[in-house]
Length: 250
Image 1 (tube, rainbow, N blue to C red):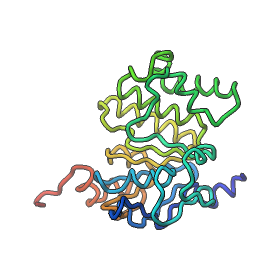
Image 2 (cartoon, rainbow, N blue to C red; image 1 turned 180 degrees about the vertical axis):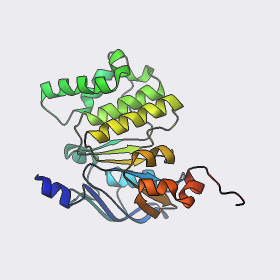
Image 3 (cartoon, rainbow, N blue to C red; image 1 turned 30 degrees about the vertical axis):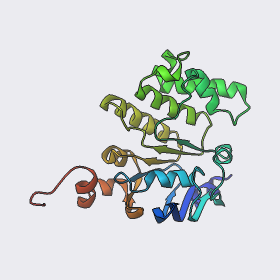
């Protein structure tokens, strides 16, 4: 793909996306996009529809309506494994590491769509430099690691597929403040390498500080979007998602 083709269309474009569980509409027709090299964050309260949005994009859930375009190609409802083969990878909420496999085996599983043996070895070493704690525990079973270490492994495993788009679902959930900072350090490192990312994150402040653009979801709808730096200073965002209440408000 030429550079002009890459920049002329979004890597990901979601139009009028709807997700329903029985008669309950979790996502009510949202639009969002991620462009080449961008880190875009999706913030909102629990139950806003953020995870459902990611699951619909990645084929884990079949959308009830709308369209998902990936590099301009309609992939709405495509099976997850086929999307991974096309370079769309996701780090799921809850990490989902293979607990009875070693760290190295988990990383090798992340590269299952590849057949370049030397490249896979090189990438394991590459991500070991980014995640030195994983290198120290290379032969340890993933299930015996801490939550933070498992999150590092889940991210490194997804990156082993050499994704053209990386989706992250609540990567800091349940982690200590030190591990949360490490997760965001890695996110910034991956962004610096030019990998486009869509980040769903409850820590709105850290997410917006790291992101280029942001979307706010509330009750299945996108209620606001714009440059992340502007959203950080927006009074409504600060009051609702950054824990800041203006004096005199009730």
